[in-house]
Image (cartoon, rainbow, N blue to C red; front, side):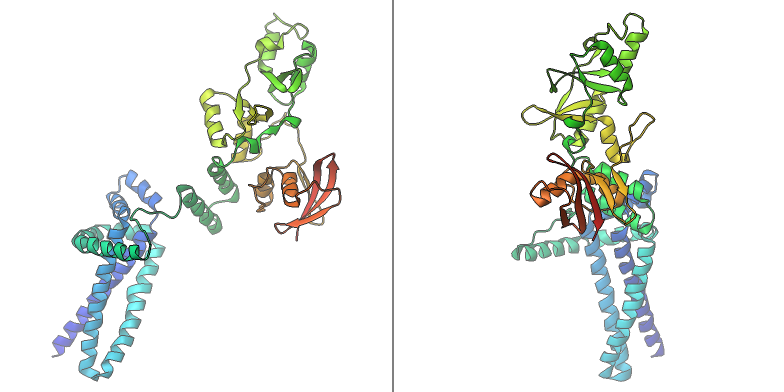
Length: 420
């Protein structure tokens, strides 16, 4: 009789261990990093490759593990109930329920799952060979159960698929970076750069272009000596050339071509024909995405393009550097002209030029102003106010207070912004 009790107790113990195995395997294989598994598989780890195969058929994997887990839990509970009934009669049912609940929750659920979450990759690769066998054994049953579940859910208008994903690849990358940043594994600058790469397809060249009112260009009617002097004094290496009106761009001149022509001795600053060394301008629609324009720049080995609206009117220009700055931040060299865009004040507020892009101030100050309403801070204020404000007018939105400190004609030149 004693031997029988010990056999029942041993069977219950084995079933609890199996339950822990199923619970831990389920947690590890659902929490495992697919990116790390792909890297391990690429480095020749066969178990990592096996993990990838298992999680590709997630419905079959979860179905097999749940079936196994429920079978051993129910069997363990049944054996424990019969065991305690022999000793305590009818009250043995209550005792068995309490004991098995505590044992299963602690030793078959919480403990193995905590271990699996803390060591998901290692745990997953360790159990993958055994789980693969279980998936094959239970595959006929999991197939029937999955079909039944889908049929029942379809009655309630719920459609599910084994490969259905709620997040796009970009969203998954953003979520992973956000978690790594909060955990301290990724610094803010690196996160901002990776975020900017993912944003390239969402931004248009019109969002980063230099507006035509701020463009430096050369008048084709000017003397060659004046044009050469302007080119040499400019902080830019490429300048548009216009004729009759600033919006009529007829060429792009490179400072190096000017210097090369003069250095050859065949031409001087007084008799140099700028148009002969200028290149044909490249016009792109303002709705072109930054990702497409970056690829076009690289493909055509070009650095500058003129941005036009739907009517073909020049709106501004965009350069390869403008796009790269969206990724890595401001790129300054010894010839750049420093422009004060955001100045911190002693009272905690900021004096901001109206032309500062919303995206740049968000990145610099870690703010969350909407970037899809307007390109610049001044544009955002006008959009929200539904008017062109006067000086000293104050507006409150997005948990910030905006005070117009300077206005030039119909343009907001400067604002003071502070937190509420």
